[in-house]
Length: 253
Image (cartoon, rainbow, N blue to C red; front, side, top):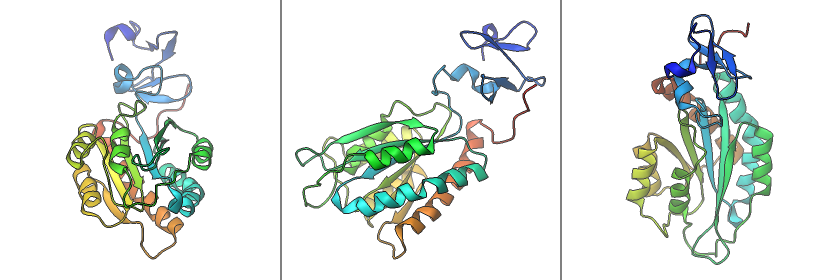
């Protein structure tokens, strides 16, 4: 926080439009809806760019073979909310739907981040379904590269990405090494729910995430329930390392 944004008596901060209160211990500031750590003020814009919680971006292969799994993720959205709430994590959702860019009509569709689970579930229900062309592989590497370029990532957020696909990786505009470098440079932790392929295992390893077998012999909804627990547990471990906090803020005076 710069000196110019704080009142001379240290009791208020300027958000660009009005003076808002600072807690008595000087560690928290009120943004109109909730208390935020003072350390994040200089990095936070009037938008959610300084969001200091957890950003969860799902990259979903929406080709024909994935319909049942899409329904499973919609059903388990509440599980991610519950796991985040248990750990007092401020959670936002983002979504990328992708097909096979080698097939005419298939594309990559990007959605913004939202803090509303109902809105995220609505996007899941409405996201485009692609043909995939019936060939081997999907352009999941291009989808992950798109994830690194998403403009909605919070500056102070723990950045988690879940890739869900039932096909080996293909890259039209990018190679595996470049994707790994970009994910690491943007500190995005990747969980690959996918076939057992060395590229997926490597991407999870180099970003600090995990590989999960999409063909594990358990109901997909059950797999997602366990995955939600692991993702939120890891996010809670990482968050303090970024200078954010999960402790309860003071009550508003």
